[in-house]
Length: 418
Ligand code: LLP
Image 1 (cartoon, protein in one colour):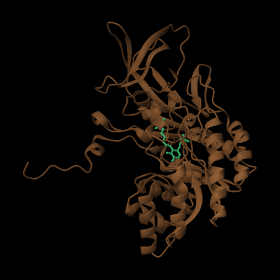
Image 2 (cartoon, helix red, strand yellow; image 1 turned 90 degrees about the horizontal axis):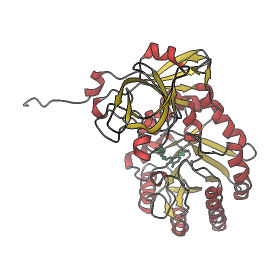
Image 3 (cartoon, protein in one colour; image 1 turned 180 degrees about the vertical axis):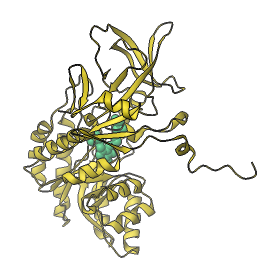
Image 4 (tube, protein in one colour; image 1 turned 90 degrees about the vertical axis):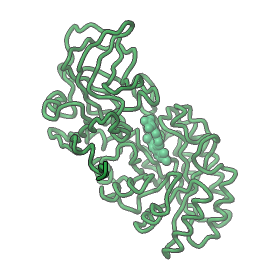
């Protein structure tokens, strides 16, 4: 379900014509639907409605403070991985008691910040980090609620760059060592072990990897309770996959019906750190065609968006559907590479893609760009980062303005003696 639909050949976001928005704000830009964001959140929340649970929106997915605030208004907590993300979540009004802090390189300053704000828990990624959190907590006279992020050695069958729960991965603590870490935590005055955390990967398209790792985690929870630890939370991480092109992605209810019976057995409140399933299909990237270019072997459509705006195709060979914002009757299909102006051969939004023939000035929509789109964008080639627009019914809000050339050099300085 999403709110990007064609009516009489024109793409709409909720009740607004995308071409009209493009005329007002110029291209390229990211466009989000408020209703899609909230209905995706609700679908997940309701699917897991039979068990005590908390959906922590994964801030890294789409970090705009308006989006995080929208999620908070729906009741979501936040999964953060840096002091910056914690700041965003707090600015957006997320209840600190619904914030979990993951990430394997937390600094002392970040730990202190999170402790001061009273977050729900830290997801601990190494023994050394465990010791540091204890130190900071005792020094500041508090106790840090923690979960150990376990690495269950599960193959999530996804792109290798986004698989995180395999034993070769840098994330988490091997399951076999986790028990010992919990025992250390139990003895240390600054730590209070209250949960178990895992995050096995992203864009996972079936529930089997979750089921396998949950069995392992449930056993760990039982053993920890035997040792007298009050394990109240099982955090299954994120990773629910979505449809980009023709893959079949399970609906939230399908994940829930496979996982709820297992989760029930843990006797815990379940935390989910959901990103892509909420944000992915709630956003598109709108770009204009600059040129058609005939190479010796290939046809190129040069557009004004590039890898610095949406890096997923270059980085993960990700396929995003691309289509004209206004359909033209009878336009013949041609096989093209859709490329941006950046000076890298890896700068493409699609390769060998059949698209209706387009002309300079035509608008194209790159779909499923709401997750890891703007959030991963950069200023490479000194390109200004694009605006983000949020549509709600008939209204469009600029939730991040287009950067200017002045923005590009803000913070830079030329030494006086140069
Ligand atoms: N929790 C943790 C600890 C994570 O590292 C992540 C994502 C999530 C939750 C949210 O996962 P999701 O529900 O969105 O699958 N840039 C890549 C994806 C990287 C995922 C990083 N971690 C992409 O564009 O595909």
